[in-house]
Image (cartoon, rainbow, N blue to C red; front, side):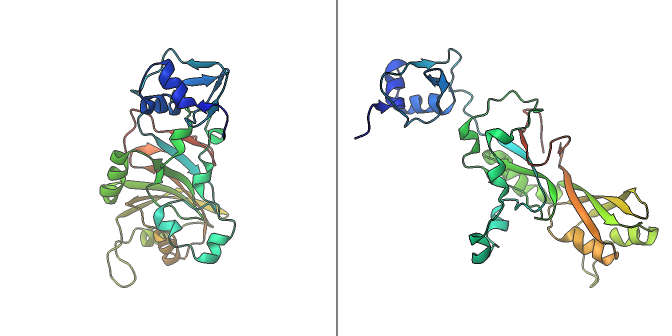
Length: 258
C-alpha cells in the first residue's frame, strides 16, 4: 500500500472544506508542501508541513486562452490537421505545437500577471488552422466562449499574414494576387494583398484574408508566378502576435478581444 494520505484529504481537514474544494485549492496552486507548491491533489503526504496561501480563493479558477508563436514545420495541433495524418506520420517524430505549451516556454515578456499553473495546459484546444510550413499566431483555449467566437465568426475575421516571395513583385503580379475569381471563374475568399517591400532578392507581401483557408496563399502566389519563401501569421482578428518569440506563448490579456 502507498504510504501517507492524499493531499486533498489533508487539505480538506485543515481548511476545513469539501474534498472537491480541496482539490480546487490544490489545482489552483494555493497549497505548499514543505515550502513547494504542489498542484496534484493525489500527491501523498506523511509528516510534511502543509501550508495554504493566505490569498487562496476559488474565484479565479477560470478557463484560460494561450497565444502561441508556432515555429515553421510544427503542426498547428488543430483537430483538422491531426486527423489528416496518415498512420506512418503518426508513428514518426511528429512535432505537435501543443507540446510547446509548458511553463518553460512561457514568454518572460508577458504583461499578464496570471500565475502559470499546470491546469492551464489541460483540455486546451487549438482553434484556427495554420499551415505546417508557416509560422505565427496559433490560439489555444479552454474557454468555450473563445472557441465559439473563433468558430462561428471566423469567416468575418481577418487573418493577417506576412508572406516573403523570391524576387521583385510587379504591378501585374499584385493585380493577380488581388483577383476575386480563380482560374475557373469561381469566387475566392475575400483577400487584400499589399506590398510591404520589394527588391531583386526578396519581397514582402501583406495578406489580409477573411477566414482561415489553408493553401489559399500558396495558390494565389502560384497564379501570380511568385515563389513563396516564408509565411507568418501576425494577427487574428484584433489580437496580434507582436513581439512574441517563436516557440513561446503568452496569456490572452483580459482586455484583448478577437
